Length: 395
Image (cartoon, rainbow, N blue to C red; front, side, top):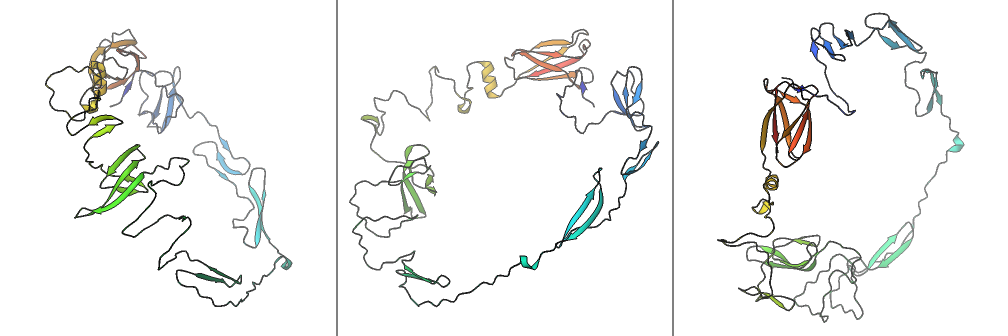
């Protein structure tokens, strides 16, 4: 079943790819000027001029081979091939020779050869690497305290501290202690710090947001499993948070927030919440769970679809928000009008329009113009007969 187009098809200068013209054993009846078809008997494409069918291939009296070509002919299948040149088919050039070629005005190779590459012996110099054997003194350092290395080639002896230093006794630092590294581990049962303030995040404020949290990570055991907890500043939300079962990903903590037990909550000097009472200063609140509301009138903003409402205050807007659709149908065609207006009263431009033949039930394609939010205009290349088509509008 073919789809019937009852209006011109404008591809807007785009390509018609992988197309196939109509295949017929005989020319179609009642042709119009410019119509084309493929004749399956003589395997020829024809087009219609004002009075007759014309072979689209035209008339070729003959093909003559030009310069550098052989073959040709005046009828039937004509073959034209490239003529051979005097060049021998081979590979030219190598590691010791350069290929040379001659090209004529038609771009053909008429000569090819290989020229040997000659390099004088004076252009090549042999280098002998001198190996110097330098004897060094044997010096040993105390493990984890003194590091000793000897460069035999340079003849240098280096003595210094190793990267990992172990001090067996008490290490006392009378000046300032600066540790520049990635991890600082203190394995002791008691830590005493005179400074009453801990500063986290560096000795100066960072110049840009590093997207990391600031706080305390602690480890504990529930009796059945080892856990990592966290309390501190959440960089992504800007809130102070507590996570009893946390995951640390590059100093960004995630997990379910825990329960904090306090007697009451204050914001500034105002009491916000106690064990069972909202503070008197609370004038608005956001409730996430309520009991049964037996009476009352809703006079606030529209309830969102995600929260069980329609998100609208009109029927048309509610239908659009809920994704509901309405179908409007009708029969069109009077034998004279080529532009037919159809009113659907759906109050939206977002409508889908389908037109089909009332007799054959085949879809037909015409121009559709959404002239308003309540009507569309259907335009045809020629006027449809009386009640020839059915139109379905969904929106």
